[in-house]
Image (cartoon, rainbow, N blue to C red; front, side):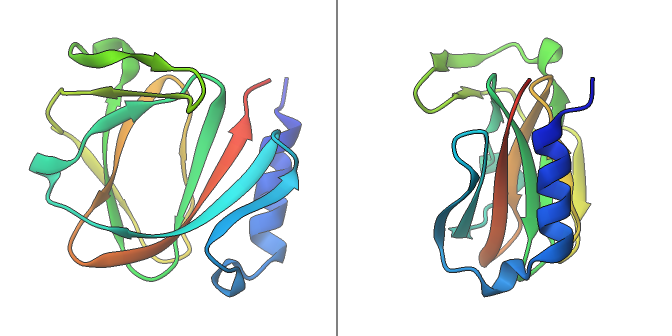
Length: 136
């Protein structure tokens, strides 16, 4: 079954100027689909933390510069930091970043719940969009 919220997110990206949105949370379909526009400090891969989510798929779009992400199958992660925080839908891992992918300005990167990801690898500050797509 196709996720209707994922399709809505892709359509939103296609039809909206994400760079024109102010920082903060923008509801598209309540808690089913929203986008956070943020400015975040980037870091070396050695300091990046892998994370996973249960309730949401992440769609991340760099808006100001290239961004690199650590990636690892969730089933291969071995060193969780505590337990899943249900209110924030996030669990971090202490596993090192061993594999990375990169996205240029405007490119879409999707992380499903089965993929651990470590965002914000790079230098300086990045302006980016993080879509949260409810898993159905």
